[in-house]
Length: 190
Image (cartoon, rainbow, N blue to C red; front, side, top):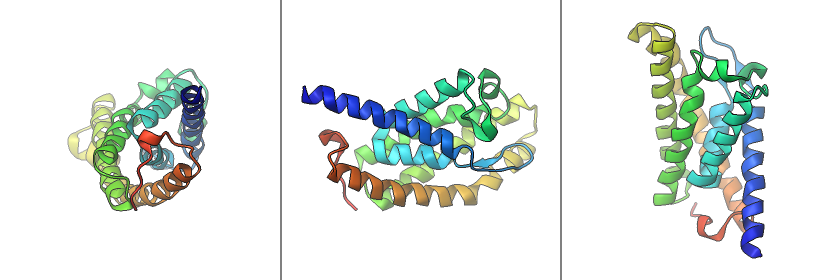
């Protein structure tokens, strides 16, 4: 019975994080080809707080909802055309990003310093996959793809990685204290 309650609780938390990604996606700073959004911050939070398994589940749920046409992507958009469009690589990159970021933390420790390292690696994964996708889907040269899909996001990405780390570890610690995380996934060391 206790295991069923834990599973249900984690399903609800996973759904909550999928919604959080959709909400933070609406915080947008428009740029010519790829806007700066709060999505990547939310993905980092999901990885830092939930780890690889549940963080990935929340991203998959978010992408599924958006692919179905619900306007949860940046600028209140949704649909398969968005996923397979020029900026779709950034959306699809969230899957390996959240998984690898969460896995790094699970294999090391849940601390702000390790979370910053993991989230910075996650940011690089997102930018590389998104930029390569943008280059091929928009028929851009490598210098133009790098200048429009990678370079403008480095400083903001490092700031988001820090925020996801600091907020994520703080929230994770509180959730663990309130028994809102599974015991096997709850070790915290700040």
